[in-house]
Image (cartoon, rainbow over all chains, first blue to last red; front, side, top):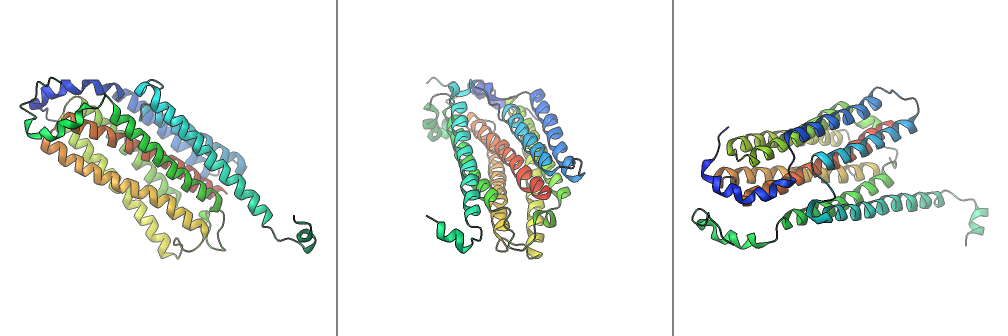
Length: 128
Length: 206
């Protein structure tokens, strides 16, 4: 690997940017955690480990959620201090919108589907 | 702003105008872009969550998805995240050759991921399970395809940056660009966690 001496002077200038970067150690920690958190859900599903489908789905979702947090912390270097806390504020805002979009869609469409079930003439008469 | 490297950077005078932003505003701006991108994916995930069980008497996820292939694709994307991390560390210690080497590895892994995805899509369409088959497949192709498109543009961006770095070296401008692509690349890996959990694993179980 070659070093680039002609840019030594320039290098000092952007040392301020470095605070947001991780060390090899933190990257490797994140990588190993992610590997484990990826392997478990695949093993659960491919090996048919758990009898109950609901439990399997809950486990997959939980492990996926944990792995997203691992990525945020170790790869995207999220913390409450970067950019004076504004990245964290933007993230929280996005998560709020995301939950509204996801839960709202599922809730509305579930009830819509329920109401679209074939109705008897009796039920039709009682519709508002 | 006193700049000891005026002579060195005189050729790129037109770039200097951009350098007067307060420290780190690019990072915050790019983060806000990623958050808006996140909302695009939220909408696509919501669409898939609503339509994902409407098979129109067509094939279901358990009939279509090859989890071994997805496990390989997931591992490739995860490894590409760590190789990008190593490239950033090399860039910090100002090793141009090392940065280019690890960026190259990341790019190859990205292309391998896209190859697997193209292979999967090709097989689905060849089996008659294209996006027009059912609401489930429409929302599947929309969600996974959008992610694949993001990876494609990430790879193009990566190649452009490799040319930039090899031509102009690890200047502050290039360092900032590498930082933005780093966030973009890790973000795509994060979205992929949602894709393989919700679409592939939960699809096969249900």
